[in-house]
Image (cartoon, rainbow, N blue to C red; front, top):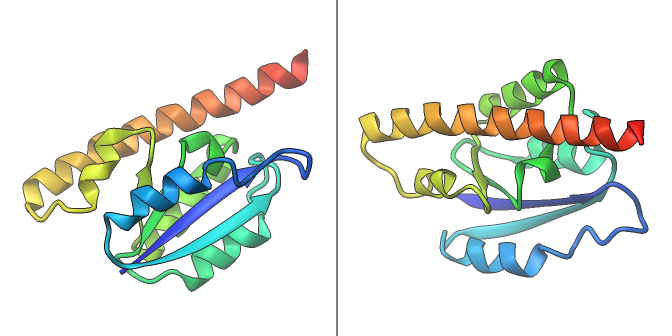
Length: 142
């Protein structure tokens, strides 16, 4: 199992690596290999080269670790559904550092608990992705 850390900032003027130390420390607990993916691209774009590389290199059971949902997506609902489908297709466990319920996916072995966690996490991640997109839309309006 590999933990794949993904950090993103929208522009080259922003520091995509600002959360990297915290995510590295978090990833140490998984006791597997750790790969880092650093990108300066808008979260409103589905086609991001480094994110695509991460997905291409991923294996079933790997962990996709992000700081927060908005670092992964500010996509439209349709595009976010595509991204979620790709993550699911690869068999990745999405762990969001600032969403503690996703942390339990790393060690959960109970099938019933794991199923409930997946449902709750999917709902929370969808909600947070929608909020990130709406926040981005408001900034554009200003």
